[in-house]
Length: 227
Image (tube, rainbow, N blue to C red; front, side, top):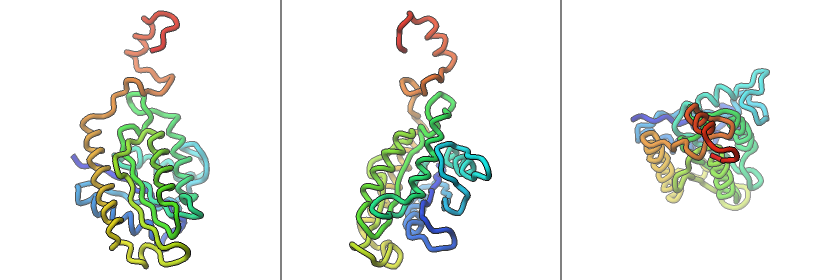
């Protein structure tokens, strides 16, 4: 069972500028590919993605093409840099654009990101890695993504200005190496589990969306009954 993963690099730097976040994300990709996962890395700022909370803002919006790839994947990993102690503005924008998925459902009436798995990669030269990861993973779970244990990996430099992940040799940091392995393995394990045993729609379909059998069942219910 081959899985697909989409990794969104939310760096502020457009290609071909070097991205420290991408360097750590490529370490995650190495592990994912060793587990037979097909990976696609997308640098969001290389595309015309305007601010908004809809899936298609029109006027040349390239987010729908990215979203199509996300919806076609089993795993979504967001990578981000830290600025002023919080996740990058691009990461915030991606979460806001994913808000548009609330307006649609999958084939059984759940939010379309149900039965997909989320993970986070963070790099920075200041405090904030836990804040970025916790907020983003919480947002992902609200959007419908499943979050396994240890679903983040990060690297932080020393306090204040200084070398970033690549220059500082962050790839050799034992803790980052460990959490990269944990995150990659855990998202794959949970994604494979959900492929075989998806979260059933009972009790978590979107209000107003009812499959035919539920419509028939509600018609037989007494007035005032909440199904």
